[in-house]
Image (cartoon, rainbow, N blue to C red; front, side, top):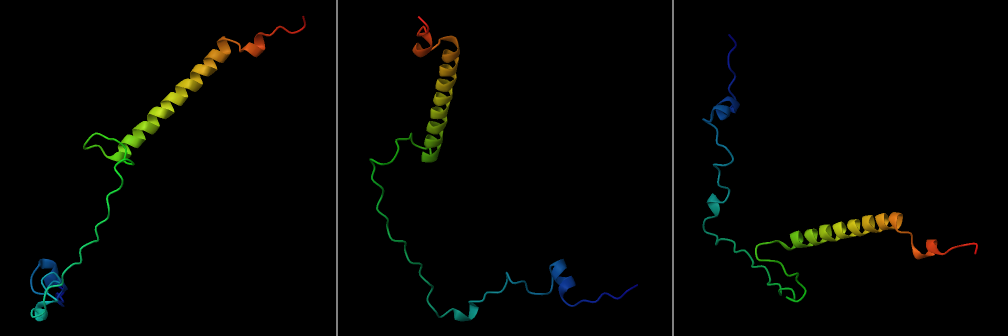
Length: 101
């Protein structure tokens, strides 16, 4: 049989031997330094309440606008279909004017 060459990779695959990067603490020698404090984000003024759409609590604003757009599209489609049907069944006033009297 072939001899198994072990350069650390075999043991790492088995989970033994070599040190993984997760076990190394790069800040271990810097224990005397104070921890870095994160800066707080500046507070942003809330938008004007009059400009926000009125949505029920828990409903995202984009859902309201998408619903309103879909509803408006349905209304326009219905209006177009109704006008097309009426135009076919009921001629407009211009077509009712007798010509050649």
